[in-house]
Length: 418
Ligand code: EPZ
Image (cartoon, rainbow, N blue to C red; front, top):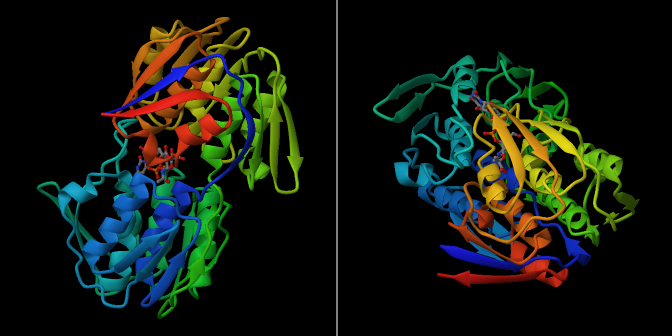
C-alpha cells in the first residue's frame, strides 16, 4: 500500500508536459500483434497498465525491449494463443489482444479481463462483433475459446458505442477478407489514434471519429514507428487541479479539442483558459461557481473518466451540482471518501447531488479506482490540513509520476511506500 500525504492549501503553478495516452497505448500495443515485424512506440510511459500489456505480449511470443519511454516489439515469431487467467485478470484492456490474435493465429483461448470495479463491464459487444466476422466463440468454465478459418468482412452494428468493442473489431477486421463497416462506432480520439497506427502499418481504415468506420482488410501488415496522442484525461485532471487550487498551470502539448467539453464547463464556472500554440494555459483565482448539471456521455460528451476529478472540484464550488453517470453503474465510490473530508454529497442510483462547501478538511481516505484516486489527490490539495490517501497502486495505472509533477507545481505532496 502506498500512502500519499498532502498538506492542503497551496495553489499549483508552473508547467507540466502530458505523457502518451494510456487509452491509446493499450489498444495500440495490442494492435502491434497484427504486424509481422518490428514496431517502435514512442511517448510510452511505464504506467502499470502499460507494463502489464507488455507482459501479455511477451506471453504470446513477442520480443519486447523497453527503455526511456520507448518500446521496441518484434512480433515475427508469435505462436502462443492461450493466455493465463491471472495476467488477463490484471486489467480490462487485456481483452484487446483477442481481435489481433484471431487475425494473426485464427485462434485465442483467454480468461476474462479484469479492471477497476466501476461496473460489471461485460464483453458481449466484443464477442458479437467477432462472431459477425466469422469467429466461432465458446464461453465455458470461465474461459473464452475462439477460432476461425479466416476472418470475413461484414457489417457490424453496435447496440452501444463501446470504445473497446469498436477497437477490437477494427483490429480483427484489418486482416479480414473483404470490407467491414462498424455502425454506431465509438468516436473517442483514441479510436482515431488506433486507425492512424494501423494505417501506418499498411492498413486501410477510414471514418474513425465518426459513428461509421470502414475497414478494408489487407493480406499483411508491416512494422512501423509511431507516437500516440497526449493523454486527454491526464490533461483534464491537471486542468481541474489548477481550478480547484486557485492556481495557474501551462499544460504543454495538450489538445484543447480533446477536452472541449470540460473546458466549456470550467469557463462557465469562472476559469480563464487560453489556447496557445503548444498547449493550454488555465488559471483561476477565486472559488468557482458550481457547474449545476454534469452528465457523462460517450465522446464528445463529458467524459466519464473525468467525472471523479470533477466531483472533487464541485465539492468546493459555490452552489449545487447535479451529476449523472450514464456510462458506468458503479462510479460514485469516491463520494464516500469525500464525505469523510466534509463534502456534502447525496447519491441516488446514477445521480449525485453535490452541495459545494467552503472548505474540505484533511482525512484518512482510500482509493477505490484509478480516477477516484486522482480525485482524492485534488481534494487533498485544496483541503485544510493533512490528508492521507491509502492507495493500492491504482493511481499509477494511469498517471505517470503524478505526485512528483504536483510537487513540482508547488503542491505539498509526500509519497510513503509501505
Ligand atoms: C474505455 O473502456 C476506457 N478504457 C475507459 O477508461 C473509459 O471509461 C471507457 O472506454 C468509456 O470512455 C480504455 O480505453 C482502456 P466501453 P471500455 O466499452 O472500452 C458497456 C480509465 O479510467 N459495455 O465504452 O471498457 C460497459 O459496461 C478507463 O482510463 C457493454 O455493455 O468502455 C459500459 O457501461 C475506465 N458490453 C459502457 O458499455 C461490452 O461488450 C462503456 O464501455 C462493452 C461495453
